[in-house]
Figure 1 (cartoon, rainbow, N blue to C red):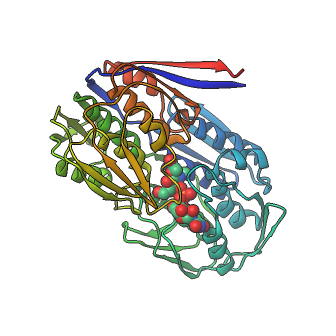
Figure 2: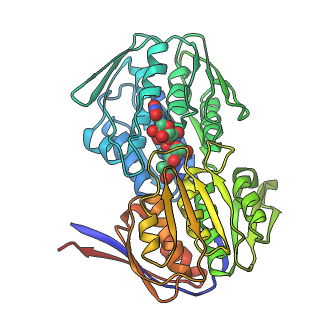
Amino acid sequence: MFMDRIRISGGIPLRGTVRTQGAKNAALPAMASCLLLKGQRMTLSNVPRLQDVETMEELLRSHGVSVVREADRYVFDVPETVSWEASESLVRKMRASSLVLGPLLARCGRVVLPLPGGCSIGSRPIDLHLKGLVQMGAKVEIRNGFVYAQADRLIGRRIYLDFPSVGATENLMMAAVLARGETILENSAREPEIENLAGVLRSMGVEIDTEGTGCVRIRGIGEAGGCDKRVIPDRIEACTYILAGVMTGGEVTVEDVVPEHIDSLLAKLEEAGVSFSVRREPRLAGCEESTVTVYPARRLKPLSIKTMPFPGFPTDLQPQMVAALTLSNGVSLVEESVFQARFLYAAELNRMGADIGIKGDTAVIRGVESLDGAAVRATDLRAGAALILAGLAAKGESCVEQAEHVLRGYESIDSKLNSLGARVVFESVSEK
Ligand code: EPZ
């Protein structure tokens, strides 16, 4: 059994430019949506090279889809018939595998899906996904840890989501594509990744009305057509590198950022006294892209933050922001309102000299002058990212163990950080 770890020599101000990868959380639902096609081809560009993307590739192949990667482009050739039974090992490995539920039920009329397990940030049920499908006429049964869903043809309905769940919105959008009539999802998620999926479904020939309003209107069609789409940049990865610049007192430019997708971070950085610039730059073929540069600043002013569904402060950036606030010149409060338990990493940061107390769903962070390098353990993807940021800012050497979590969401993070002047080494060691 191999365990990955990252060794970091801290205290080096990062300088230079990195380019944002394609968004993991946009690529995964977009890939799953190819199951709506019958005997058609879908291509996706700007897909990041990540373990979670490889898991989704494996999952699609297990359903009979031919998946070929050419550079950053994927080609999915979907046969006339696909398997409607999802692989237990793959669904258990990655929660996002449950995104095959909506498309498979819509095109095959039946699905057997292992219930995704919980993870270190909470129980993460899929009750809202299933409730919506039942409203659309599906028969759903849960037995021995499996979901058995059946529907001759789904019926378009007005569905109110009790919580703007990203995954439930995505599964129900895909299910609605082949449903009879119009489906209206109210109180739906408004993350940019939802817009990206809507764009993919539109290019399959579906009429969708969203505009990030928290209400998605979809008119079902008989058959979805092949398409070719580009994945949006990864806003969470971009923000992680921006915070790496902030925490090391360096000057870091991140290319291919959509400013509107990271408004909440930019607003909080401004509040904390960090100076940055956002520039729109012309690119080939008349298109434009934006870059963000963050400049060396004095110690951050303390902040009060509550994570919320988009456009609120993203829960996926909460650990990284807490890491940054450990070095602020005051007491900050960060409330986690999306997941039940997303502060496991705080104890690891405290091993590096941070002063974080957890009171219920709020972290109380008393800023310290500096952090000390230490051996720490990643408990999930974003916690791992937060520990890497802390290691970059700390004095001396750090080692982040179970770094395989980080590989799930950050493409080439070691070479990207080293291109900014960091001294980071990725090691795979056999566990004793
Ligand atoms: C997506 O997960 C992201 N993953 C997560 O990113 C992200 O943290 C999350 O959205 C919130 O923004 C992908 O897109 C692949 P939710 P998802 O359904 O869809 C509860 C990362 O680090 N809930 O919006 O699973 C749930 O338990 C990952 O990239 C129900 O109770 O998130 C959670 O507390 C981590 N019942 C909250 O809602 C349901 O049926 C938000 O979940 C569904 C969700």
